[in-house]
Image 1 (cartoon, protein in one colour):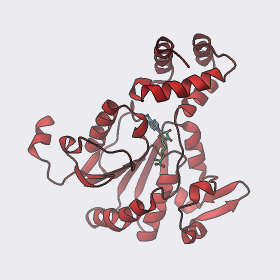
Image 2 (tube, rainbow, N blue to C red; image 1 turned 180 degrees about the vertical axis):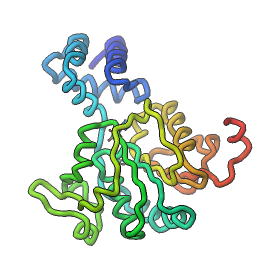
Image 3 (tube, helix red, strand yellow; image 1 turned 120 degrees about the horizontal axis):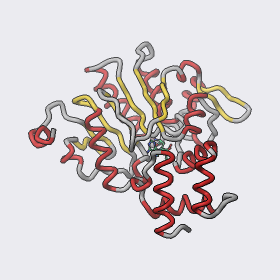
Image 4 (spheres, helix red, strand yellow; image 1 turned 30 degrees about the horizontal axis):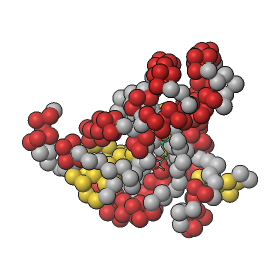
Length: 271
Ligand SMILES: C[S@@+](CC[C@H](N)C(=O)[O-])C[C@H]1O[C@@H](n2cnc3c(N)ncnc32)[C@H](O)[C@@H]1O
């Protein structure tokens, strides 16, 4: 495993080459992950490895993709998605339609396609906008192709929806053309790239678990700015936002935060 000095050196070279700041990620976890990768490469020395990275864009792209852990599945946390469908989406659609939604850290597309399927079920004729972004170009490639998806990633998908929206392929399942067209995928680094505004709903689930507390706070505050008044942020089950009230959010229930219709004075004072 890299020692502190080697990891510092690696982080600086990596930032210069990719604009990804590894200081934003939990240090021990990321150092262990990167060290294992470098040790298994043909050039295990950190300096030599970084020099090779600089000369080889393909190798750099692969490392950038490896950095991100992108396990995902359709309807990950079925109960929460059910709540989202029956309560949050229904409430939002009473005020605004079509909706503007962002799946941030979308991996291979399981999460934004889950949303697209849910919206097709409740409002088939309305073309909501679903923006889905991730830092991992390989995962985005699979997402744009609409698959293939393994059985494993579809285990929570109700059978009727599997039959309606997916086609069996030799190497898994692919999502229907109709659903594919409802999602726009884009490469985006949450820690460096500008955010769009005026979202009704943002999902950022199982992404911030790898970030330091300081990075998480900055990110949640940026999501707050990106939401419309009355909009919702849906986080992962273990991604509790400790200072949600300070940022201005109302904690509606576990994993669900709302930007209030009326902004309180302490939040206005910050602006
Ligand atoms: C575990 S997956 C979560 C996928 C999905 N949101 C879910 O809950 O099933 C985490 C995703 O976050 C992405 N990610 C990590 N750091 C990121 C960053 N700085 N900007 C954008 N995406 C990032 C990874 O590439 C990965 O696809």
